[in-house]
Image 1: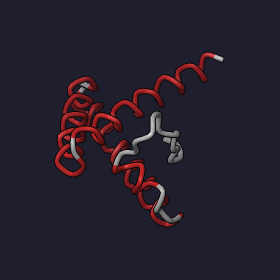
Image 2 (image 1 turned 135 degrees about the vertical axis):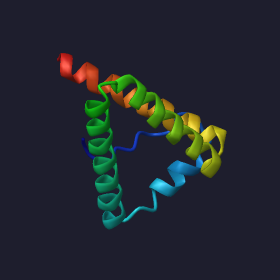
Image 3 (image 1 turned 90 degrees about the horizontal axis):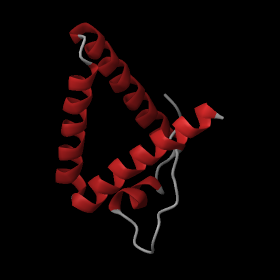
Image 4 (image 1 turned 135 degrees about the horizontal axis):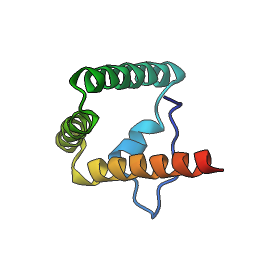
Length: 97
């Protein structure tokens, strides 16, 4: 679906996730992009088979946010969700131009 894009963090505090992002090698990024692309393809397939993309989106979001919370805490999970929404908004704006 695209490349790993890191946006600067607003404010002075960085989340745990942004600290991890700074230490990723090119191989790590390639591995994570492949996982992301494969999971997105699988979710697209399930959404098509079930004919309910909204239910699949909610289930995937719930799984992801809950897992992120358990792995990294509330601030990091919320920050990640916000960055995803910001990225979607930017992509929408760019597609309109």
